[in-house]
Image (cartoon, rainbow, N blue to C red; front, side, top):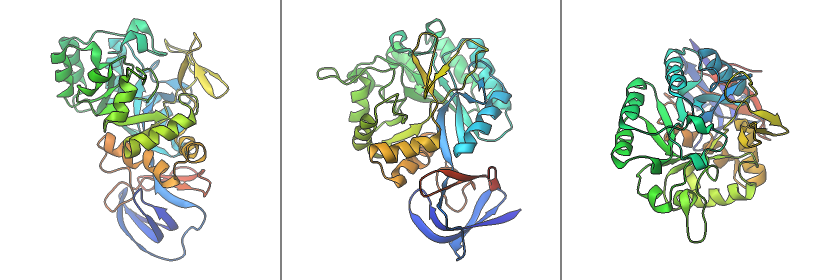
Length: 357
């Protein structure tokens, strides 16, 4: 099946094009060429990618490791432009981890590009809103079982590297699993020496940058590690976002860290205004959407619209090795977002199919 979209303005993720006709065949971009008469309102951009989202529609994946939870996450977040996501599991016991892996492997719906295991190998002092009872020791046997069970499933894992024996950390790093440092009290030296090139939600649940102790935050700024950030003004001040962007440049990317209200399992996050908190009042995930994160970057942190869009498209695609997403180019998947000039989502296409009006 072939279709065609014509837009007066297209931001490919790399450059601006004018008066473009994009032909789509079998869900992929067949060709792009100049043509007059396209949509004049706003502009077309690549579909957004969220590498850390916990659920949607009142179903938290950490409480229900099911295909229905994954589908509900897509159904909610596609409305605000997210076409691809890693469903994320809070620090959880083994049975929940295995169920999450099985659900991801069997899911046949839209949007899922992998599983993000946030834990269980945390430093308890930096666990944040995660249950301390679910924090576990990274033994070689446990790590080998995770590697074996996730075989064939793109898997991203947030870990505290200082909690690992060196040989076990090497075992995990040498596997197919994409490691990211987070929920960690690692020293600057410990973080620098791991060789891990991803860091989870900058400033949150990690050792901070102090004058004589740079911590994981300082290690992020000193290295070229890909680093995610939650641009909601709550997890970090917008001035911190602005400075982080200046220091990290193209290595800083957006996540929503979004949760949903679900009281049916071990994780209960209540929404209080614009924030979610757990029973102890600890900040717990966000109420953020990716389009809002982009607007916050532009309106509150002085980041250009083009760069803010890249933080939600080009960069996360590179982080998670999603070669057929992240930009608008011939041969890639036809996943697009129509944004208004003030960066509001007007329409979304998923593999060439229009999903919202």
